[in-house]
Image (cartoon, rainbow, N blue to C red; front, side, top):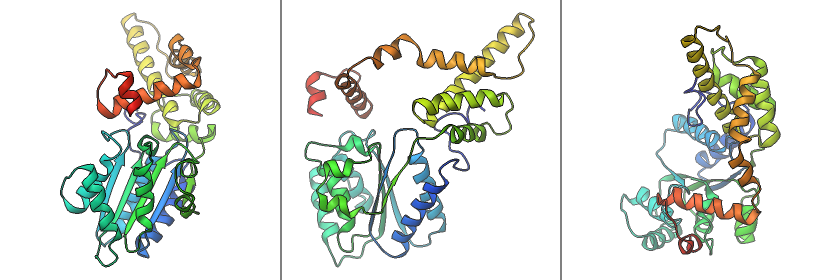
Length: 312
């Protein structure tokens, strides 16, 4: 059960996102079957199943599709810099790796060529918020290329911010999205309950009340499914340690994980002094910390100067 509760575990079915899955599938099916180019914008706070739903929809479409389809998944957190997205896309098209500037020139020429026969390309741009630059040129180009005549390009952009296109892009580009926008609302406690219950499968360690209180606590704060799964996974670890201690001391065993265990884990995870201290920070300081974290994850460098942080 601990493996199934991990946030990176891929479940056999999506729980609570059936409607969004259907919308994404319909949009992409139209783009793939009618030779339409397309840009889809997916938004929603972290932990609402955006990426998992998009991947599931694309996987299903790939299994059904007979014609060739080139597929690329870009993650803003994993690129050394935003312009590296150009390099990865051109590498997919040509098999060649060039500099970001040269890749941009080649991509502009490729998608502007109205006579060149092109294979259908589908690109996921995950963590789009991280790809923001001062000129917003990376996001602009990826949102603009699908609308070039005969581009044969579909872009699925995934971001945490609902109004990012309006704030960052020309009205002409953002307005093209039209109905190709899907927002993922935070999970409510019923959806979180079903997600946890589905992940647990035949595991009967958790009482229904334990799952219920976990779901309600998370729904009240964020609706982030990853938090609910983290709490339950940690509850399993605490439960296993308690069983070991009781066996070592010849004590009676608890048969199930109860609300008491969930409350204990929740308090340790979210009511500790460090968490409360960070929560007390001003918005500007929180933004600096988030920017620092993004830079560390993107570069792998654990020591970052103020100059490096500002320049990025």
